[in-house]
Length: 545
Image 1 (cartoon, one colour):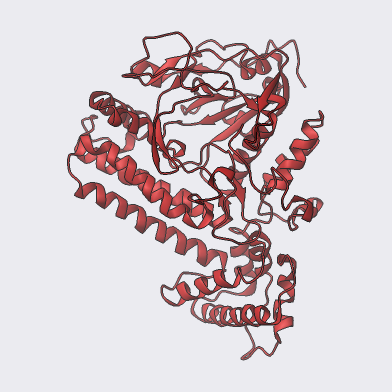
Image 2 (cartoon, one colour):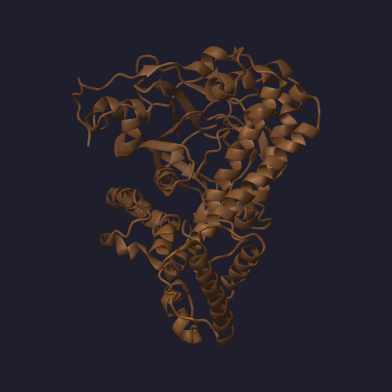
């Protein structure tokens, strides 16, 4: 897939505002160590001995002004494998801290991520290019800084799948095999295996995390904290700056409010599509309200608010699906604590958290109304309707994605005064969503909910003129037909480890249009197969790679 002769490769322009504006680590030796008083360390990617292009994302390439020929060139391969730098690239790893599973972990930093530089495209947009799995940095804490193919496939596919679902996210430009073998203990059971190494080029307007601010406050580096906040405002939030161009205390609070709103919007999207991040540590929270760091993630299959895909979280379930809105609020409180030295008052920071609560509630109500095909959310009555639905979805193992998609085809018989269908007839369109048949009592409760739902649809029709077609269209715009189920990613990984990348490419095509019918891919609109129920990589995952 590469062309060894690439004279036409487009040479992008790099700005690199982060390194030109913030303090660098004066030490240049690339060994794990504490890095104080600095925002980043200079570091070069580890060379890949035998790189091979697995896939690239055409939409991301276009955003960066790379042509398809560029992406299939030898130059592209060597640059995004870590073997070559383009003119203007200044690679570095950034310093940050964070709370992991609710506990302060101190310095963390880019342990296996290396920022190549900030590209400025023809539209004047700044995009940071980051290699994940490109080798050790001063923040690697004794690890090798590398990544394996299985985690890289998951990162590459999920970044793009989330974007096309309409979820704010970092993007992925390329996935490249390095030719290395990397040792990983997938189950943390003392049985490590050698796996194929890979590197993903991640793309974002900024990779700044909550933890970037936390580390300076934890170290009492208040001058560096202010410098970083001011840089972030100038670089990523210039619309918030006052007329004079220099931020003040009110600007900082307005900025935090915007971070709270975009974080609420992101998490609401997660809940809408049934996505579970799995590792919502503060160092995995983007300041831009974008999903970042795709490790042990997953989509709800059987609807279970207590489900987590992360083996490390299996006991405490801190990052379970139903807890994600509250965890995001807790993380924002830690960011507010980090910014406190610039505000020196508690009350306005507490008000920022209320902004999050209000925005999340607004987004949740909007999304639930759309998921049910309603013109608007009626507080009180619809709260009860949704709460009862969530209870009904747990009566038996019910596939969330399939249920909501099939619910759009439920016929409410809007022109009839009464609905005399029995329980079995009412539930028949939804049966493919159930992993096992409903027992008699569960069937009765589920059918009772459908009758309440029908009454609500009749009222919506009267009040807003919503007909069956409008309702179905509204629902199918927000309830995806196709999501990246873990077993689908694992099938692609299994083939890729044998040198067959065809399933990766098929999933790329499928996941670009998750709300469309795509008859040629109908077989992906199905329950998780039985073989995947307990298989590693298909049910729960670790952070081992």
